[in-house]
Length: 314
Image (tube, rainbow, N blue to C red; front, side, top):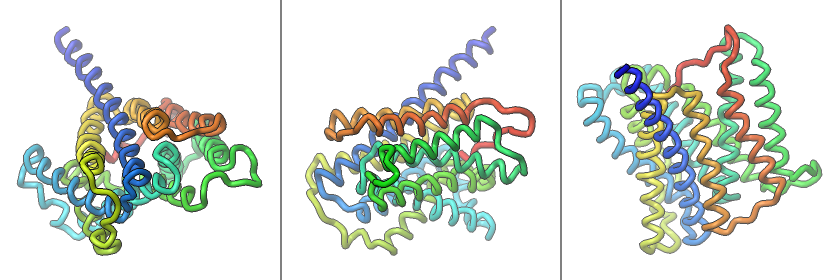
């Protein structure tokens, strides 16, 4: 009986962790939009610094929580280091840069919704890797994702594009990068630990983006206390806290339920965008949002034999 009570308590904790992670992710995205729209900060200044600072904090956390012995694990073999490079540059770095560029080109809610196309790409990759046809619920999820994206970008009129080509490109890129960082590091995180892999991945991404985009040459805009509060919210809440809570939650309730509860992210982005930043959405936007978010619930449904979910990369 005591074990059952403990399991129920752990389940409730896991649900709360994933819910709060989604809320925190949504909040950090809106903070990014605040910096772009109201403080004129550059994405080339925000993202390299964010990745470096968040990565450093996560590496320090890994040293304390996962032990110093495995801290240099990703650098000990050529295979592990290659996995880390792909995870850090094509996964974490590309995802964060493209996500915040989409926010700059459109808004936080649209960026979040387009990023939610990532699970659809993941499910298609798993079907290809397992050499099977997608389940009916997976095919329906793909259809709803495409329809939702169509409504979001055209408002139902195929002759017009209400979302800029740049916003659509970077939004789809963020979905691709989300799929990469969800699938690719599974082996690395098993060998080195989640915090260690994520921390070093962010550090490498931050270094690469710093060399590529030179953030010191993009230090422009208004640097007042509100701007710095928003920036450090992105670093600490949108990176360190979110990853920590989500990983803890998924460890207790599993990736399927975690992805459902993590759907509080687009809801948070929408509410804050409307009431804080006064972003206006049309009814067709909300229909597109709902269709894309519904794919998360469909992909979390249990499938038949041969349609099992691969272990989460997180």
